[in-house]
Length: 110
Image (tube, helix red, strand yellow):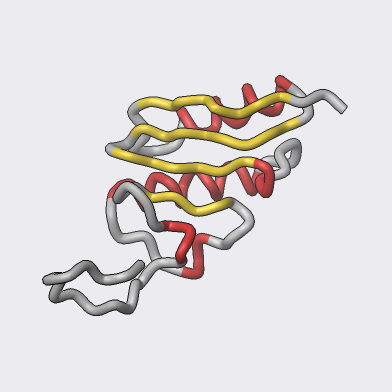
């Protein structure tokens, strides 16, 4: 993330490039949460949701992106079965710190 004129912060950004944008936590699931230790509440929620999705045997976590803003989780991506999308919603909603889940997952039957 480039520093803005007058910004006294370092140009080095402590988070992966995929976390940039809108000030909310976002990282594609195929990147391990262990790369950067989550520090904000939204980052901790995102890490918890991502870990639950990765651990579930019916979910290919690489097809679902998770973003969090003020405890509200947005799931996006594509799955081949509506049941998988429902499982993902349930896992996200059951994660600590989640206040709402916005489902943007598209179901594309193969």
